[in-house]
Length: 376
Figure: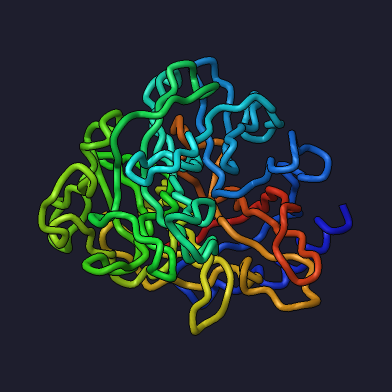
């Protein structure tokens, strides 16, 4: 509890940080641990390794995922009362062939109308460092390419099964000699606007694909092939499978949205204003920490504003005890089954990395902090 109080006091030093900005988060109370690795992990690799996502199942139970590649949920009667469920909901096939698009997998975003059939987008890593014949360097970052795939649950999110096909993949086959990672990463949550379901993915540049946050939409989230990406003017981009198609690659890459520049951890609609609010963990000229941006239409975004200064995981200095990532806004009172709306008060969920010897390890917790959300 002492560490939580220190976090709370630290954040409250910045309670007024957003007053000069159009968007701000103001901490309104002490932090809470939602999942503590040392006391609650189901096994050594059970860690919060992705942004928190939650939905209500058909019986009204809340399932909250912030998974590692062996995907488990926190389950409870409300968002305020979830606890570990050690049953495995999903895991990737760990196939050695990059053409299978089925290696290590993180459930990353959910869409459901009834709480029984749940569609999921999957952050799918092909980890070439574990296949030295394909990537001789054997280095994780140099051998890593990423795609977005799909999974489905028909039992309210208790278990998921892979759906064939890809949602988003680079129009290039795997190469283990690039010397860096590439592909489409880190889906945000899925948010509904009119007839469409939208999601952000982060593109890491390779050839025709420029780097940045891309916006995808579909009318049919149950069909992986139905997602289309923004091309700068319209949602015309159909991603292709480079192992099964041979079209012009430049026709199958997305146009990053202007100004965002970092993976978007969450997108929610702020009900009092009607604006969409994006949260990001970023390092920018104005500082490091949690940034906010707002949009009326999910395409045009305000310049990101520093809402909470914090040390971002991967940017820590020796001597620091904690670092942070995956900021997500969730409101327990949201009428949305997938918590895609917030009011003027919400919780900011983040992963806290408990540092040892200046490095990031498995010891990390899912923490939430109550905040007041101020937008124009």
